[in-house]
Amino acid sequence: MRGRLIVVSGPSGAGKSTLIKAALASIPKLAYSVSATTREPRPGEVNGQDYIFLDREKFEEWIEAGYFLEWAEYSGNLYGTPEHRVNELLESGSSVILEIELQGARKVRERRPDAVMVFVRATSLEETRKRLQGRATETSEAVETRMSTAVTEVAALDEFDHEVVNGDREQARRDILGILNEIVEQGDENAKRT
Image (cartoon, rainbow, N blue to C red; front, side, top):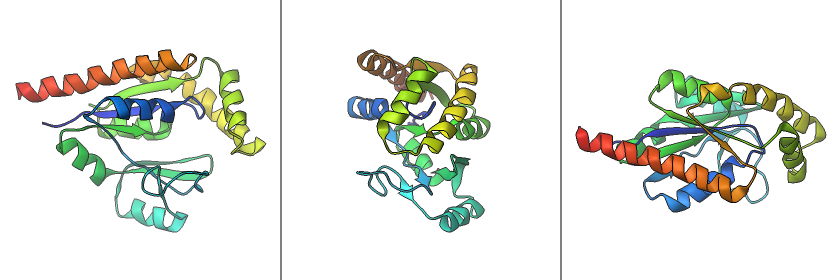
């Protein structure tokens, strides 16, 4: 029984991580693929749990070795998904969530056309700006960079299979749980037929 590959993407500040944590706590056959990054850890983040934190040289070695399912540069930092771990989780029967930005999502869609794509966004770009500024973890220049990227990401909405608008947090939680439960159940049904 092989799980399904699920890509969750959307602008910074959309609440993707919070919604994914809720889904992981509620859906037993769901697993999270930890991405690698060259960005500095935020307060409270744990290496190997939130991200695999690498320096740029090591990350580039992993690229050369073909270690990533996808990788991209976003806001001056490299991010990538270690492919071997994704494959292990899928083969174990878990459906796997990748939380990645638009460039990475597109690369996954090219390499794994069976991946299910979920887009999470705030109610507006102005709300996205408020959330980014409210984090107090970014410089004003970084917020502006993320905002210009957000415009491009929202414009790509039609490339995704599902959309979750995260305005009311409880409603957004119910929406993503409904979508992900359906995807996991479809994976189970497909496995039973084969």
